[in-house]
Image 1 (cartoon, rainbow, N blue to C red):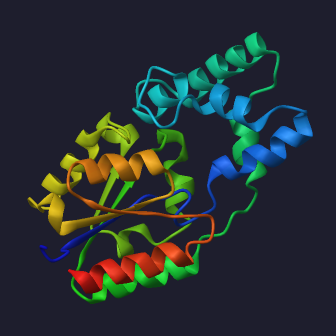
Image 2: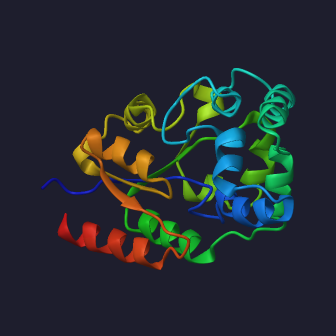
Length: 212
């Protein structure tokens, strides 16, 4: 098995709490099924579709336009579905210092590091303030900047190309969404699913690095 040369990370749900985690509590406040809220606000997140949130994350429409479309979708289903309220429910979600420390260790050991994030232009400054991005990652691939979002395999291929031609078998990817991990694994990248408690994922990361 080839040695791992690069470790790739998602942002939300890995370095911070996932916005999806706020759906359950917000759904209770609104008297809405969290699964329905997820469907209306974020669409089928295990796919890449023409849902307004997906178009937002591909940089095709603005946050204002996406919010208007999502509010209309919610009205059709008889629910309040405001994406900004979901992100507001996260409050001052803190960055996970254990992840930051681990990336520093990886870079110190000579491994290449990159971030692959499904994101929106309008959130760029806010999320980049939460962790020392430029210190931790030599490359950031933001879906809203490249026009491709996970789980589209092309975003992983682009990342490996921009790292100078790292082979899929030489890369490891951590994400909190199973379909994204599976998409990476479909290319030959080794994947680790990050649960709300990231300790198991960090242990899996260490084990895979030791195997390689």
